[in-house]
Amino acid sequence: MFANALTGVRALLLVLRWPVLAARHQALRPRFDALVARQRRLDTIALGPAERGSQPAIRPVPWLLCQAVLGPGVLALSSVMWAFALVTVSTPLWWRLVSENPLPGVVVMVGSTNNAFVVTLLGFVVTLIAAACSHGLPRWHAGVNLLLAGGMRRGRLTRRIAVLTESRAGALEVQAAELRRIERDLHDGVQARLESLSMVLGLLDFKLHEVPADTRQLVAHARDQVGEALRELRDLVRGVYPPILADRGLTGGIESLAEHAGSGLRGIAVTVDVADRLAVALESAVYFVVAEALTNVVKHSDADQAEVTVRSDGHRVRINVMDDGRGGADEQAGTGLAGLRRRVAAFDGELSLSSPVGGPTVLHVEMPCA
Amino acid sequence: MRVVIAEDLLLLREGLKRLLTELGCTVVAAVDNPEALLEALERERPDLAIVDIRLPPTYRDEGLRAAIEARRRRPGTPILILSQYIEQAYVRELLADAAGGVGYLLKDRVGDVSELLTALRTVAAGGTVLDPEVTSGLLNRLGRTAALAGLTPREREVLGLMARGRSNSAIAADLVVTERAINKYINRIFSKLSLAPADSDHRRVIAVLRYLDAGGRSEPS
Image 1 (spheres, chains in turn cyan, blue):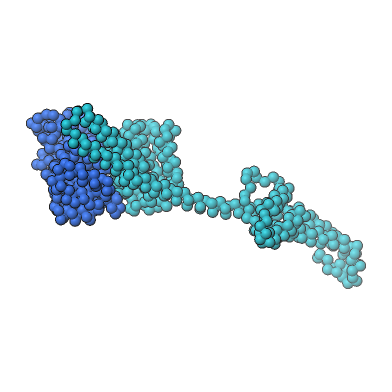
Image 2 (tube, one colour):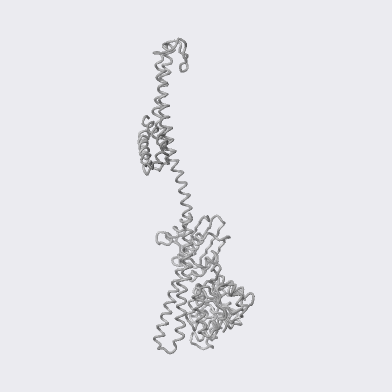
């Protein structure tokens, strides 16, 4: 308790000297940290070992003020209690010395020796209370310190979560914008150059009437290569950011997906009911979830028919992909579903898969809109 | 042939201009935005307009919208759309007015000069030209149904070429058979799929595409 009070006094001194030390550019942190460590040791003695794990960071000024009040305060309260107890217990020894008149005792007027002994008995009770204070107050003080750190930690975590949520949304938007920029750069850059090259080669081929056939074959070969490069680029771009998504939103994008996936199936029923355009990042997440789901259907399910539903009520967007294939899809088996789950998790979404052996397989994804 | 070009990228605009000039076309206007295209079409009344789908201001599908607008103002304005992507949605919108004289090709095809020339002539003459990619997806989807309908591989091939807007003589040349043989194939296909015979190449394209689009169910026409 004395040690607590000492910490409190030091804390008060540190607070008072804070501006002076800061002005002299002296290191405040080591002093503060030493004080915190000291107080933690004391709290540990009072409460037993603290929980393991990293100690939360503490804001200096509130902590120091708290110690400055609690340390000496607890000591003062205990001292007053002990003093009171001592005085009360020893009443029979001194009451005559003080005055001839009756003195007010704890509850009894001290006017005779008998009364004084009654007061002494009461004094023992006060002593017990004082002892309880000595034992309990440091523990209470330590408890307050813990709460203080915990409260600060909770506040800090809440702020941290808010910041992280915002920065993640920002990162996702930046990523989506970046992909769109890449798509545009490819369209205006490499793709355009290759097309221009293809035109030149076509013209060359057109003009080479009188050269040997094998020379013309070389030109044709070059043109084929350019065509192949353009095809690969087109597939790449579709996987990065499909232009149809920018043009026609989710409705056009998902219909286009169904058309491209359609070759493996007899029919895909598509329902897209999304009133407004979603955020770019979310929109392409929905697109790629459906793309991956349809790829899985075509590759693994051996289905005839599939059904894709995308609905949004402005708060949540719900995706349902169902097929009449053989079922038994195993999330552990491939990387596709795990990738889907990660993509959905980035938007705080949920994914559930039901695929009993024999089908049907239903994939359901829900993501919040904001 | 008098041609208007609408393409926002200078490199490709100049490339196309040069290529078309070498092929004997006269490029009467080469513009880079949809308003200028509509204005040039009004002013020049060209035999053909070659239009990139992506034009300013948003670089999405302004070219396609301008083409549809031009054909709304003057039905049958011959337009060949060039794009780096084939999307069924665009095909449907482009063919929605049921007037001939439209084409939709991947930009890659421009490298094949004889193919390009055929496309230019077909569209200018009021025919329809669709990229092989438009039909290959639809035909693939039809795979199982086509087998059910009892189409032979050769008949499927002819069906694909019809859907691309090829005329009977062009199909005959492609497959190296006589036009009479092609006529027979076509009659057989139409009866197997229970499609009503179409009076022009363009109507035939629309009928076949609708058939393929519906997943192999012929619609009452």
